[in-house]
Amino acid sequence: MPSMFDAVTRQRFRRRIDKLTPQSERRWGTMSSQKMVCHLGDQLRLALGELDARAMPGPMRYAPMRWIAIYVIRWPHGFKGPPEAFTTQAGEWVRDVSALNSLLEQFAGRSHQRDWPEHPVFGRMSGPLWAHLTCKHFDHHLRQFGV
Image 1 (cartoon, rainbow, N blue to C red):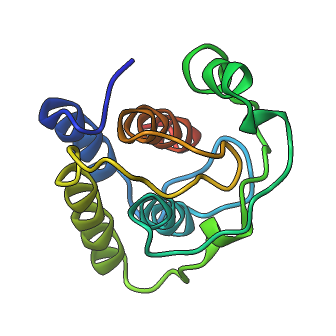
Image 2 (image 1 turned 30 degrees about the vertical axis):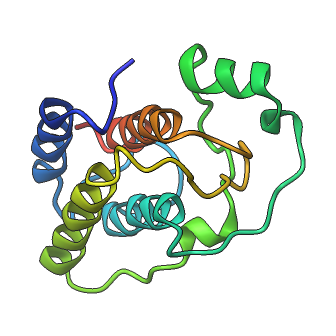
């Protein structure tokens, strides 16, 4: 499983992000490509502790289910994430993509951090687990837009 703490992995994701445009067509869901870019940024803000999120009860908060969700299964289309992960309003495309890339580097810069915020769906997580989850989340949404 790739990790967003790895520079080569981040570069691969940045190349995929660079293929997006505001006109990129989604294959499923309702988000525009610009809203999706902001959503990925909000997920990083959750990981960085910049956004507070209310815990969502459910089985994913337990280690075995969390592990399966992050490492094994492909996420279904239409899964609803925490509302706080949809906080940032889309603005200017270049600015939003630049903000996402900046947040990605901030996240990677904390690879040695010991304590991480709880994920609203998955509960208590380590930095490496956040890094794997972030890859899975980014891949899910970039596939949504065919990149």
